[in-house]
Image (tube, rainbow, N blue to C red; front, side, top):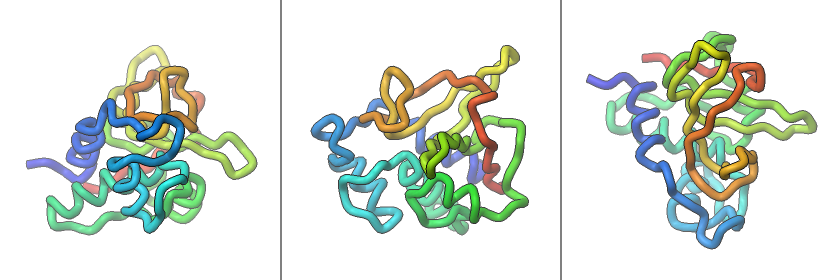
Length: 155
C-alpha cells in the first residue's frame, strides 16, 4: 500500500517530460491543470502548483486530506505550512524548498539522496539548465546546500 508521500512522488514522476505549450508560456493543458488545482489560470509560474496538484491527486486516490496549503507561492507554502512538517535533511518523497530572495523560490520533490551531498529531484517549471522559470517537468541533480529546507508529507 502506498503512503501519501510515496504516491505523490509517483504521480509527480508520471509527469516527467510534460512541457508548456507553447514553450515559455506557462500554459498548455497539463500546466493549466496544475495551476487550476491552486485556483489560477494560465500564465503563472507553476512549480508549486505542480507539487500541490501531485499531492492533491494522491490524497484523493488514498481518500485522505492534502496537508499542503492551496497556493502557487513556494515561500508562502514554506512560511505557512505546519512547522512539524519542516525538516532540514532530505528523504525521498520530501518537497524541497529553495529561496532565491526577493520573494522568489522554487520547489519540487526529492527522488533520491546521494552520499556526495547532491539530491535527485523531479520538478515542474524547470529546464535543462535547472532554471526556476523553465518550461517542463524534469529530473535534476541539485546540491543539498542549495535548499532552504524540506516539507515531509505525513503518511
